[in-house]
Amino acid sequence: MIPMPLARVAEITSGALTGIADPRAVVRGPVVVDSRAAEPGSLFVALKGSRVDGHAFAEEAHRAGAVAVLAARPTEAPTVIVGDVLAALAALAAEVCAELPEPTVLGVTGSAGKTTTKDLLAGLTALIGPTVSPVGSYNNEIGHPLTVLRADAATRFMVLELSARNVGHIAALARIAPPQIGVVLNVGTAHLGVFGSREAIAKAKGELVEALPRKGGVAVLNADDPHVRAMAGRSAARVTLFGRTPEAAVRAENLSLDDRGRARFTLCTPSGDAEVSLRLYGEHMVYNALAAAAAAYELGLPVATIARQLSESVPCSPWRMEVTDRPDGVTVINDAYNANPDSMRAAFVTLGALGRQRRRFAVIAPMLELGEEGRLLNEQAGRMAAGAGLAGLIVVGGEEARSIVAGAAGAPVLHVPDPPAAAQALLPRLAPGDVVLIKGSRATGLERVAELLLGGAAQ
Image (tube, rainbow, N blue to C red; front, top):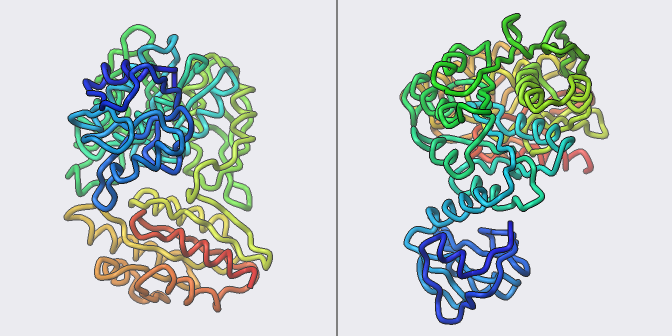
């Protein structure tokens, strides 16, 4: 964060300083919402959640070195009192972004692949200059401004991930840090229960391209997704397409998979071609790589440099196609961060490629937030699993998991209540050379299964 006196923080956030707060004290960052992350010069933001109230940790943050607390009420620490803490956080981030010496802001959105694409793109922009990007999936009304507030005068690029839980969310995030380049990956069925239809999801995702400026703005769109391609008409910015169709300016040709399910392809651009060999698992990663390549190409990076960086990139954010080989030869595919019908399908394709000529198992949990179609879509996931040639399928969850079990009728399926039970049931069955896929919605906590399976290798 750029250094800022506490009086200026109060002015930006329309806040009032408590009597013990020194208006001349300088906040240098970081801005944090976890008191354990507070350090000398930081600003602690006291958020009130459903289980924890940050106000209770204000004094702890101050003892750790926080200059002050941004809060909705007085605390025992120096405090900037505001009417709405989240709105104040957004206002502070927007002002900091506006005061920076013209960094290039790149935004990434889509129903699936946002975090991986953000990681790939941040690796590319870092070749040009200092880059700030979210840790993991800091992509909502809390994580987005916190990421922006990490920028300082040296920052040349901000690669930001924008998520939407409803119409208007992406537009609000884009106002905090107005993007010059906007990347839209896909329009899938994630959060279908919230939005109601793919058309509504497309409307929300398209807010990113609507936020781009006419002068100097670039919309980077997936040519192979009709909902995304149609967004070209919603942007005043110039449009460039990526994908596998010949019409895409940045595209993949000669695509193949190695025996570990990793893609190789020729990266084609208007100024030349180069070979890419991804170290990321799954054919679906090609679109993430193409999106990052298209945005980096717009920044002027040579195609050979882009291809080399993409080929060297490894997973940066946890629980997204993490492939680990145990010492005994069992391979664990931890894709437990989240799940929707599109990513579930991609995960099973990857399992088929990586598990060729090997015994395959899957541990899956219900896909959530799918609304009225949830039962049908989870049944379809069960049928997909049943047709995947598995030696065993373990379905985790309560009543909501029964749709998957029903869809997998006739397959070797076991229904268990929680992740520890899944690991306990699977561990004795595994033999050297087996492959296990772990996939489910974030709320089900299936990453615990991966932890137990990998720990079990050492026992």
